[in-house]
Length: 253
Image 1 (cartoon, one colour):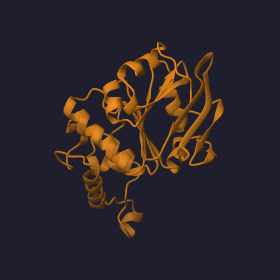
Image 2 (tube, rainbow, N blue to C red):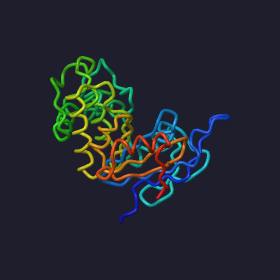
Image 3 (cartoon, rainbow, N blue to C red):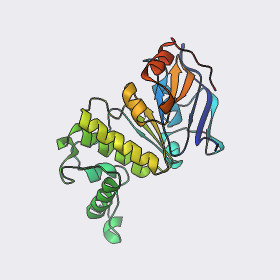
């Protein structure tokens, strides 16, 4: 079996007297969806922050594509092809979908106009439309502010933005929270498409049926440590909940 794309080993993170991670480990492979689950306070958010450059662990190692790496900033993570979709979306509601897709990475017109800072909005919209089409993201309009779109469409744009700029791995923190059934399925379909393109997708979710529906593997955190790993096809909601709560224990493989 090929080595994992991402292999975090024995990460420790303390905030004063609180130990959020107590030797946590985690792996993600290219071309798979791996869900990271755990009860509130299990350390999921802290682990993702450490693996996306937002926080730095106090000890432990992170191996990416076979080499030990440091992730001192989100920019350093992005340089490796790692992007994150946060639960609060972090979209600009007054801008249209294309402008959101290129937020912070705007294209300028060629020549003198570009040197003067004039944006190439036509090219950004063309590329954005192609990206949305490739990911199966259906929008009511690409010319209206994103704040006027449905929750599912806004979330799909946020997911697409990270996917477009990621080349290796995407973290998705509760990407379907507060969405209806139809909107949720659209976002899950985008996740599947991203996996099928060969990227690693890490899904953080409290929705166990959703986890089993979209994941290839599941890793469980409890009290700052990985306590179980499952193949999604071979487990049940009851086993996942048991591992999260401590009712079911499994030695770390």
